View 1 (cartoon, one colour):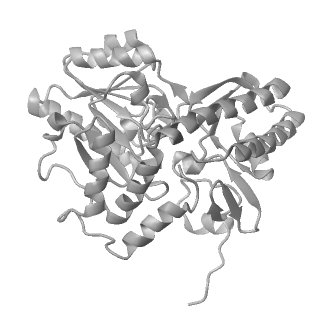
View 2 (cartoon, one colour):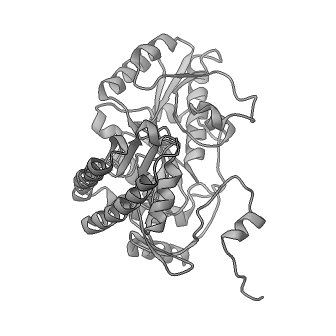
Length: 408
């Protein structure tokens, strides 16, 4: 069989058009650098959307994957396996959780969480206690259930009818939540920082109020830490900084450092409701994924590394503020750790793609979080020199876009 030559044009020929990937095709990565088919080098400030937490081709992760690949690849959950048990034990040691359910993605982790909260309420109260409250502009995945709990109508449009019993209220508005809750509420679902919604951190007082309301109404609190988890904010999980503990936490993205894996963490009392046969995942707890994830968890849970993530946040903000003083494109810079959003001023709304294209031309990979926010979620071990170098490239990109003017 002869080797096939593929390009970006091949995507349009053979792939379902639900994505619109960038014009270049990456072929190799090392740390925080990526090279495309033409050999051009880029600094990666995307981290695969907060996934490649230890960069590309990290030697420790490669070693863990290679060693496991010579033992077991897959068993199914008819059997358990050592990597899954070791990873689950480590996650319970590091967090509030007593029990873990493994799956393949953030969407699957949230699907499991949303089924769990309804089943728990059904078991302990009855079918009438089934309502889930989420927040506007939230994002929880692309399955029909998770897109319904997510607070962005654009992701639900065309897929109706969606599951019932889901309410959305304004984020960081405790009074709105209080008005929406009742004895029928089985759970409140929230992101500690709204990711796709624009890198909007939850106010700590708001989070504490949400916990109190859940306790008052015998409802469970679910933290979606798909994007904020595993060191992204400078804490192993973001809840650890907020002074509250959820009943259920979902995690994926950085958990596998690039290898697909997700997990739902919960307490003993909640876990009982997912008894034998109630839920499952063929690949969940895959030995390859769990072996890699254990190495990721052990590396990132190091106190010095987490402190370094918080320090690097300051460097990013310093550089973005410097660029903003010169070009005035941002209304504000927000986020925590190495999840950073530059909210564009009104005249630049809807033009995030222009900044991404200009950055790409300068050899920098960036993201957006909605149409109004430029997002950066690099590897947690990115060096200070790479941050500064990337910001120099970003500054050149911004200057070129500004010189051409707003299209508003």
